[in-house]
Amino acid sequence: MLTSAPVVQIHLSRFCNFRCLHCYSSSGPTERNSLPVPDLLNMTAKLFQAGYHRVSLSGGEPVLAPGFSELARGLADQGFRVAVITNGSRPSPVLEAMKEGIVHHTSVSFDGPELLHDKVRAKSGSFDLAKSTLQSLAEAGQSCGAVLSATRSSLPHLPDLVDHVCASGASHVQLHPIASTGRAKRNIQDVGPELSSEALLRLVAMTRLFQRIYPAVHFQADVVLGQELRTISHDQDELISPLVITDDGALVPFCFDISRDLTLGQFDDYDGGFKLDRRLQRLLGKVTAEVADHPAASFYRELVTISQTSLHHEPAA
Image (cartoon, rainbow, N blue to C red; front, top):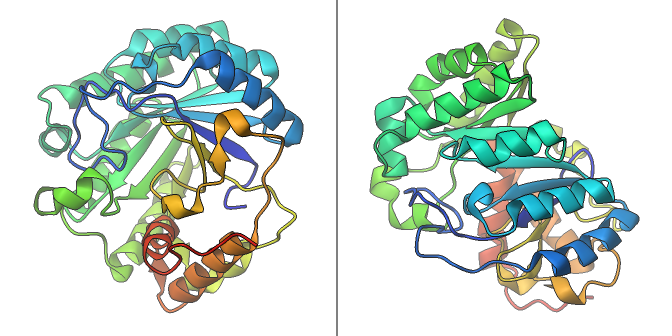
């Protein structure tokens, strides 16, 4: 399990009003796939019984997906704590869902200061929309946070950006190194190359400094230190977490863009629980061995890279 508690990540649709240069799922305005909400809720009821009690709604832009409110309400009725990650362009649906109590936490994504953010989002004014949404959620007394993309372009601006989102009311700040997957792989010149191991180590140091400056805010850097790999479990009796449901109905382990050779099945065939099989134990072992050679690494990036190169077509055991 790669999270502190079992979590399901649902990509209800890849429809998005933005076409971000770094989007790992290559979402955009022309994508129209959407999962049927009643069928999803039939499956999530089983997932809740299996021990998954948290859900993160992602995409695409989740609040624009058909059935967003219906799904969030159904998940809350089943007992899930529901979180949303949004680009902040449409505050009303998520604010209404939070006031109704069916969404417990919302994170707004940022890619840097205004000029950089708007460039990456390929949308003028997108930074102001994200900033306004974060402030509106905080002023309404709702639990809200920010996900900050960490790239070579944004790294020098992170201190000012952290100051800004904390002053706007963020209670959680996640610093996420961008990986060269999805659309980012095709836009590497504009997005910038992935952070080096040394830069990731600096990101960890910065995160710890931010935590001291803002003790009331929870900070998280999506970086693993080689010396701390003992905290990552390979226990086959643990639930797979995150468990990802993609917009085409596939159940995949850990992250959206992992090799589809590791697909666990389709959501409408789900029969009640997923534990680590030997393929996934081998994958985690390979990633651990790779990361242990570096002071710091993005476990997410290594998962995607290794799954797409060295584990192709291995049978489940």
